Length: 144
Ligand SMILES: [Fe+2]
Image (cartoon, rainbow, N blue to C red):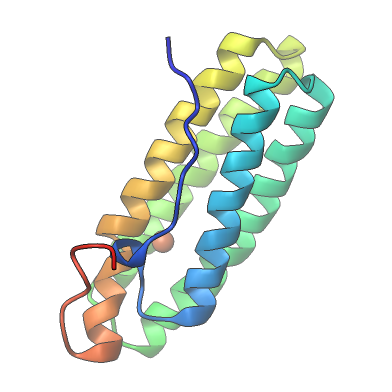
């Protein structure tokens, strides 16, 4: 069975932009709050509230990140925009399913697994393409 693990931000997740990195740290913190709420049985109302925060914050952050990629003429800009749209669609389906079903622990776990996997992977391999556009050198491949 999937058990939400504590996620930690490190330099390999850096986009090279401090503001975006801080927004990613907030997303990671919120995923950890969701994991704690599930692991510690805080209840559906609390889980739904955290899902609402994640939805609101991620779409606001995506806009900021898309602007930053455009400013720096990042070659990943289009791919990033499309990936964000796919994420929002996927997230909304999960969110609606959780709300309409009254929320089960199994569904909350599945949402955490999918969403946290997507976000970490996306920050690493798509958002990370911004780093060389800002600093003209490769992104760190190992945490300090
Ligand atoms: Fe992104």
